[in-house]
Image (cartoon, rainbow, N blue to C red; front, side, top):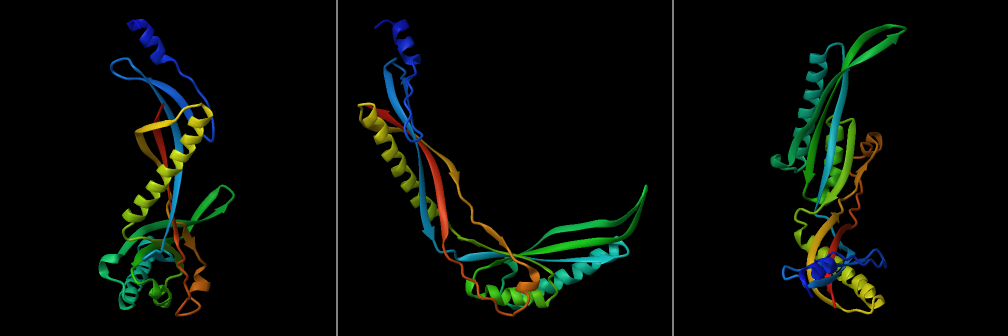
Length: 237
């Protein structure tokens, strides 16, 4: 085959669809046609969370911004001290989302500032899931009027994510094999693999009045779905 014919063959693209898969023809460096099939795969593995994140905040209203921020900061410091007493380590406590904004009264074309609101949140990482309820109660007693969470996480998700990737590749191989069979071919070596997506845990919010009603709240962490998507290119024989 001459060079022009080989180039023309290398640029030929044949497409066949089955369960989200495609086939195409690539050209190697020596102009030998390489037939491939591309398939997507999804892998899901379950893992019990070992840490949880909570957000405890306070919002106050005062006549001026300095006073509002000062009062919010005072409550935030009380929240920090309370969750420390409940067993949360200093390195697992972080101040976040400090905001100050004016309260305005609109009367026709006139706008009057009637006061200022200040808000501060304290982000807390709880490593003993059995103590989530205790920490929530402590923060609520310290003045937290905004409570968010828990967000359940894995402190180290490498093993679970590796397992999900292996399952995703196996899933893509099954799809590619169906594709190859429909085309009267068989699968060869894997040419390339790319991760195309990964899941994140769901962040739950709860009403502060409900969570603050008891010092100890029953929390069921359940299990996390670690989901990974991959795209794999196989040689098609």
